[in-house]
Length: 218
Image 1 (cartoon, rainbow, N blue to C red):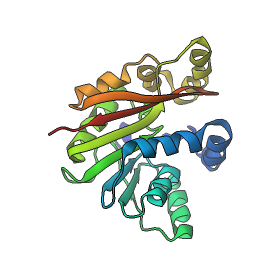
Image 2 (tube, rainbow, N blue to C red):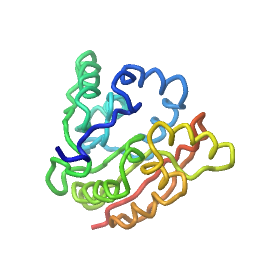
Image 3 (cartoon, rainbow, N blue to C red):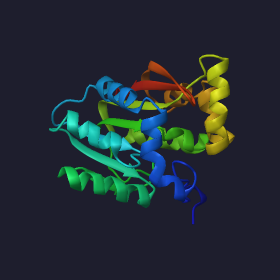
Image 4 (cartoon, rainbow, N blue to C red):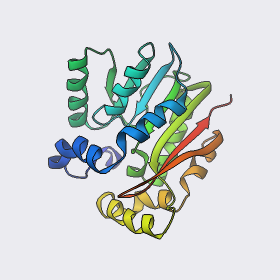
């Protein structure tokens, strides 16, 4: 099996997966930053939207709730979290498509989406897979399409840098260093995106959370 396709759960261990949603609610400003992420994406009716690394579907369902006329897909490599996402969807009678797949090999044709949105997924990837994923996102976005990401950013101060060590101990230093050192936006630019911006940042108990935006011009 391809080593990159060995799934590391969101909290690193499968037995912690059921705790992911309550931990996000209790320890992160989840409702605030996810609403902000959806707002900055400027989604319109009949836009096709991909929630990349959708996890348990909290953001995916929020997108659909706020923009019911949009066609929304959620993609994740972890079948266990997709089961949770589909269960949430069934209770809300939604028509979201939850797809099993990998961010660096997106199972979609070119120019398929108007928006790609991702929350707390990229810091799980090596630099090589971050770059491959960003190139894949560029491929599946339509001209004029936009990428919007919430993920760990450069530490605002010593307190935030110290707090982020807890994330690095859990998720690994190899995949998270590009974020805390501020390299991640440059990786987005190198994939071909224009107008790469840090739109907002939040201080959390685990460190600085940044919201990024970028555009595909052609």
